[in-house]
Image (tube, rainbow over all chains, first blue to last red; front, side, top):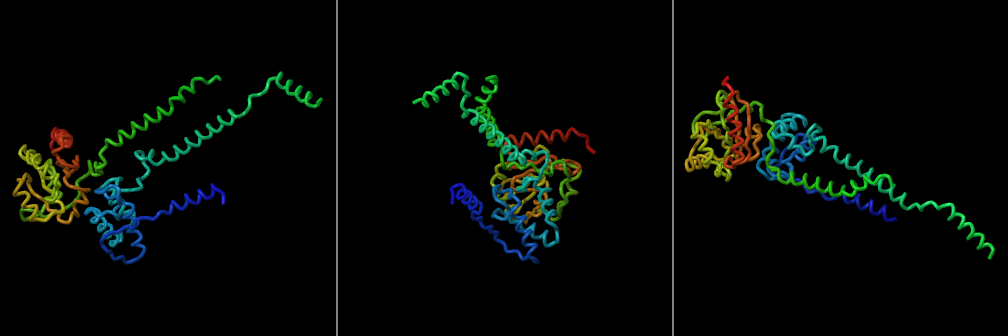
Length: 158
Length: 183
């Protein structure tokens, strides 16, 4: 196997790193697997405001516990995923969302990776072009070409 | 070569990029990540009804109408609440209407805390399980909401009022409200 392919495979393997298991203390009973999935999805996508680098599913903060219960209660009442997200945003702002919505305040946040990527491609392309032109030998003058021809003929005579 | 000009710009490009990055990081590092702006500012206070801590009866959104009120979220387990308590009492002595919002506390602990440190509150609403606090977007104590005469939240202080910046900001918003005519 050649080296680039091997490196690529290693990089792919890295993306499957072990995810820490979310461990809420409570055990909720769900009437369907679907609801349970939505519950876990929501509690993983909502940020805990007390320990800000954890989501509601992972955090042991009191508030996170309350919010898990709140999500559970709302799901039991038949509220939709969107209704629950809206409920949280109304109270805590977009900050509770780990995936903030696209709006004037966040457009730079969302587009920055693309902008930086395009900028990078442009930069690399220019760099490569500059290198290619630098490696090209300077064109020979008419006299030099004449000299080379003469050298050849001298060589042939020998 | 005809383009001598761009090459000098190019020479300084790394420096420009570096300085910009440092400036951005410097701004980012000096911001306080704990200050999450409340989406409730300039919105009506949420509907709620809570039992009172020290008396019979209840406190609801309706009781906020007609006065400029500070709703001070506190708990006996909250250290920063004790730090700010002197300032809250001072505000009370100045005639500011302050409602206590006792957050996720035990009634006996809360009562003992007030008996020991003094009670500046007109009334204290008792939110034992913190359910109403969720509607107010509370995520820690102390927090203080400024509610105007129409029951609209005008300002929120996150953290202790004993912090000079917190205090000055609150007072300036309060003064701007007081000049507006009573409706």
